[in-house]
Image (tube, rainbow, N blue to C red; front, side, top):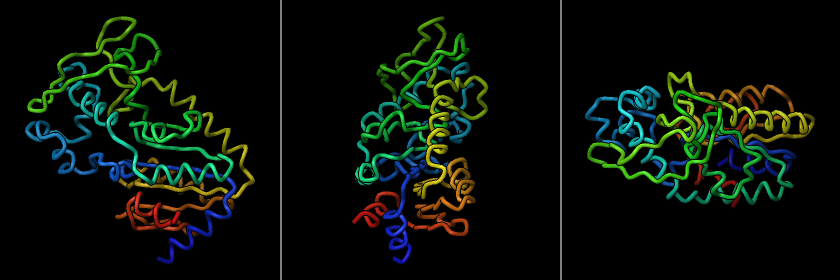
Length: 269
């Protein structure tokens, strides 16, 4: 494929690396695809019976209306992400950034911490939508965020959790530190700190040939795509967009219509 060869040439000359990733990055690791209702309902049949979309279910209101259902949904995802092994593409990327003196940063909308699990430096990751592995108060009573060490069993017939997790400070129900739909109580302290580190990385490398490798970022929630498109307006940035269904790129970009794992194996072979 011509664009694979172009990608190899750009990669060889890159001086700084930005890795960006959306939900499609985890599909090759066996994680469910929530981009359409059918994929979402296949993973969660009880929610299909309720007729709720992913956007309707991923809403903080459920921690008030039905906290056992809310924690059933997020508790199941938490255990799923804990058990998932990052696919080979993560390893290939890690080896690549090590060859580039580890001059990289990661920008992701994923809440699963698969990059950390694969060995990437936690100080070089910006999780714009937060992390399921961290907790906060639902109220919130303070801006404290703490690690989620809890284990939750879920009845998959009803998607109800066997227990709830409570705020360590005030005792009301706790929730994941994830930016949900219609969410006015997300504590962005952790994400804001990560954002500052990304900004510092961009400033430190403002005159270097910078490569953006984007994987699995669609147009339905275009946060990740918009970030790459905006940066490529600057002459020293080149975008490689890996997406099996939406590989279109701005002028000067390289689009590869493959899944993340297959594309990375082709590029780094």
